[in-house]
Length: 507
Image (cartoon, rainbow, N blue to C red; front, side):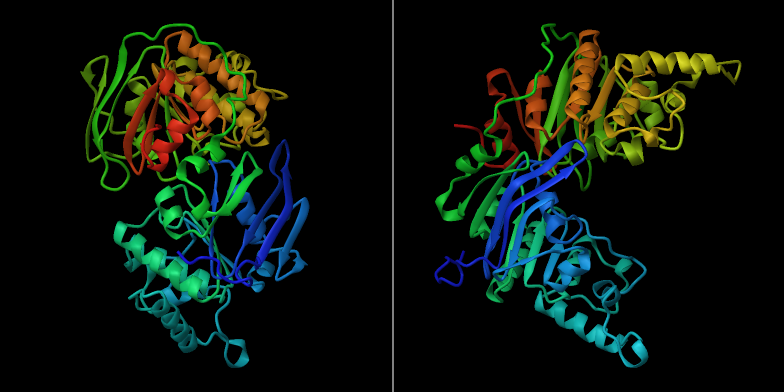
């Protein structure tokens, strides 16, 4: 780690001052500040939903701020689009960068800004030469003429880094850059960061992994709930202090009181392993229980839930329902055995946007709405009306296409769809992500009602107030493994974040 020794190094290359960004019903950023210094790494730290991704999109010209000032080299600037940000020397290396398998490595690196020769045609030889130079600069032993489809995941990630560096950026944003890398590849990435620092580039490093932050960062900035909390030199802060800044708020939502006792064991998972996503998953779930799963980006929670629901196959593992071994090879098997899954991505996985509300809700329950192979429209409306009323769904009519609803009401449709199958276990993956406070309260109240009726609930959530406010127990995952199970007095924000970030149990 290089100290900020000179006055020049302490003068920010880029500053954000008072940046505000508002979306309909959501204030994503509220007068936040951020400084990036030449030849140094600034770690941007915060929980999921703290506003980090919004800042990245503002810096790269995807979003424009509603207030505040961006200063580059001492002059106020605006980035009306992504090209303007790239022209200013800003590039981003994302956890998931869009690349094209059928193109060569060189074509992927220079897609959209390939060198041109006479008559404006792409100069292929020059493109390959420049690509080779960039790859050599980051010590990536990859042939620029290789088709991307022939590379492994780690090599593709290096191509994504080379693509980001191909615009000769002065400011490099690394957004969870190690999520798909092995230990050896992470070490190589650290070496690359040191090279970029030596070249005088200002680096914004976003990571949930505290060991990475304290290894390579020179400065830190903490956001919480879209607000600036603090900043300083990394040498002047401890992991404990960062955790406190990240989560230092009360559980500020009103959650329904839940006084009932949990019942007998309904579900037991033993030894679930997957070659790349998770391993050694063991837990039990009881009647009337809400079991929270907490973790940071890359923890493997959603991947495990999809496997439990039969979307993907584990390498090994046993599922027991009421003590009996149950084989789940597909979502149909899961539903037949009383397990349903409400996915995080309701738009792509949870609902058919073009269909009306009532049809979305009744699709998995056609046996309840048909007779002798014929659908009964009145019964479909009756079933849909029952669950939408209980969830307080707001729509002009049940004929309304789901795509015309707000995010909160779309989520209610997806939940209603699976509840209509009368399950015994429901998995809710980020059940209130992207919805307003009123809709959150309705979902939380309905979850409590379902638990009181004996339904067993698994809730995956990245929102600490929600996890603490709704769960009877919390399982914490990190890098595909269960690292802690907490209940009672052990359920504190600090405990969850420390386990999730890999910095041990609370003292």
